[in-house]
Image (tube, rainbow, N blue to C red; front, side, top):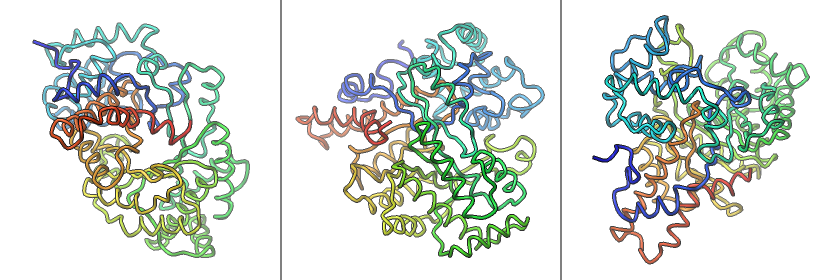
Length: 472
C-alpha cells in the first residue's frame, strides 16, 4: 500500500501529473505575503520542539489548529492555557488529527510531516509519541533551524508584514547576514487608521511619531510621518503594502472635515459612524496615492470580522482563532475608491482578496474594470485567502479568475502564514493548479496540441508572474 502523501497526490490524470512534475514542482517560491516573525528569521531560531513550531509559539500559535482542537472538545488549558505543555498539547493535537479528515488541516499536516521531516506515517494517538520524538530529534539539528527550513523549499523572497512604526532592526540584521533568501518588509498601516479607540490610537501615534522623528498633532502631520516611514521602508527594499479591511471605504469628505475628526479623536472622543467612514476613506486614498507614487504594489484583504468571541478576546487577545467570514457589501465602495484613484492617475498595481466566497466574482470583475493596459495583470484577483485557502476555495478562485479574466497572468500562491513550515502549501496549490488544467486538457476544454503553451502557463502562475509583477 502506497503512502498517503505520494508523488501523484491529488493529481487525478496523466496530464496533471505531467504538468506538475515537469513544470511546477521544481519552480522556486516567492512568498509575497506572510506573517513570519522577522526576529525569528534574523536570529535563525532553533525550535524547542514540534509543539512550539507547529502549535504554540508565544502569541504566534496556529489558530487554524486551535479552532479544530476546540471543535474536537479539547479544553482551552491544553491549547493556550495553564495546562499547556509540549507533549500534552501535541498529544491533544494528535487526538484531533483523525477527526480533521476533509478539512485542509489533514492534508497540510501530513504534507508537512512528509516534506519537512520525511515522515510518512499518519498522525494519530497511536503514532503520536514516535512522531513527536522523531521531529524533536531533527529540530535539534542545524538543518532544521529557521533559515534552513526556508532554504529547504527554494524560497527566493519572503515578504513579512510590518507596521509603519517598526524600526525594521531585524530586517537590517538579515541584510547584514544574508542566508540566501531575500527577506523584505511589507507595509501594513492598519493601526494608523484605527481611530475608533482614541486612547489606543493616541498611544500608537506616539510610537509612530517617535519612529518618524516628529510630533503628530494633525492629520497632515500623520501623513507626513507616514511618508517618512514609507520612504524608510522603501530604502529597506519594501515594494508592497497590505490592508486588512472589513470592506472598502469611499465616502465623500473634505480636508477640513478630516482634520476636525482627527482633532476630535486626539481630544479623547470617539468618532461616530459617519466620521469613521470618512476618515477611513481619506486614509485609504492617501495611502494608495503614496504607494502609486513610490511604484509599489498594494494588497487589499476584504471581509474578515474579527475578535467575535468577546470572552475569549478579553482572556487571550486577538488572532487566537475567533475571527470569521464577514457578510458585507463591497462592490459600490470598491468601485468608487478605485475610480477616484484612476481619475487622479494614482492607481498602483493592486491585488484584491476576499474572505467571503460570494465575493469571488465581485472582486474579480472589480479588478478587471480598472486594468489600463500599462502592466500585464496590473489589477489582480488574489489567491484563496484564510478560510478559502483550501482545495474547494482555490478551485473556485481559479474558476472565477479564468472565467472573467486572464488566468495566465495570475501571480499565484502565498503562504499568509506565521509558520516556517507552511511552504508545502505552495506544493498543494501547484498540485491543484495542475489538476484543474490537466482535467481541462483531458476533457478537450484545452487543446492537447498546445502543451508547450500550457506548460509555460503553469510555470508562470507558479513563479514567473510573481517575479515579474513585484520585481523584487
